[in-house]
Image (cartoon, rainbow, N blue to C red; front, top):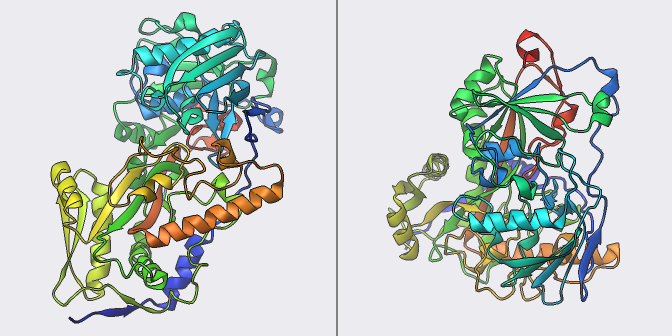
Length: 550
């Protein structure tokens, strides 16, 4: 048998290091683990710009969303709609930019020791836009509504562990779980609205607790939002927003070009379509989609040779650098966690640091002459197919025979189970916490989340469930000092490196979503996965003729 050997050039290694060594942010500790897990913190951060009163009056922000008749956010499957609804409605919990869970409408919470009962203390100072106070009864009514409308609500699937709830007083709600679910706090990110408005008619305005309140819904489907707090209105740059309906992102982007709209939310696929336009101003943020390669286990080098494994992974990952001019729509990463994740505790994560001397050595793909490398991809995913073709070009230029096979769902699953592939370009939807344990439990299977039968999922039985304050929230240990958090984060990173090297997957990127800006917008958002329009109140819109009429 004859083998082919290839050298990775030093210039590629240098570029690769620059991709991997990205900065991280420091997480905030939420709680300690003992008989109970609890937290108390400021839940409604200040949102007013320091220089807002120095600006001239802003025009009206025109923001694209999907067509709506019923404005109930609990029934809104449109991602663009959900993004816009976050301006009007808040949730119990929300992920911040480091993917750490933060309270939004909850003053404190506690789990029972078996983590099957969660007690929530609702913030007593919060009121809806119609002046009525937020109570535990409103929250429970929203939970029951989602459960009763499971087929119509996009929030139902994540709440599968919710069994029932009961109210002890106006501010206290106890939720009973039918099974242990380490993701349950992340599932409590649905919009909260008054119980009395859950069954509204089409076109009826609904009160929320967010920064902006619904003020008018026109016959053409435009929803007007006004700054909700009259006492601070004079200090806010952006006081009025119009949500304008469009049939598709294509029509919304045409409207952006023609100055008929100011902001458009773009999904991962839409970002891939529009990001190549140099004139387009985009604000990107990490999504919950991950792209990696599955290598046929028969092609993986010897299991006990991490040097060979790491070299092979970096060889395939170099295809991304080869195709960098294509501007892939995501952040390069070897593992399904963005560099800014709270579990890293502000440290830099890099597989290269594990064996830096080996990247310049020869790569052995263990393939005989005339062997065609079969690259499999789902036929209904055009961006993945494009990535597969780029990898094929990289391998072809390196002297290998390649073939890209777009397969239907049935053929794809059959190829996966029969190991009828050399490489698979895969997209995975990550759990809300972005914990990677699910990925390394069985890398030969395409998964969209946790194995329900896995013992405690991310808990102390998991080899990866040791990290910073992010993991203490999920019950993996007790962290009383910053040094403990640091040590746990370092331990987690070592476990993660080991799992990533030994698995038969090669990380490519974490996909991104984006906000597209029109020419009239001054300022910049601070978007994140749960709050894509974060800090929109600080933006300023030139109040020309087409922007000021509403």
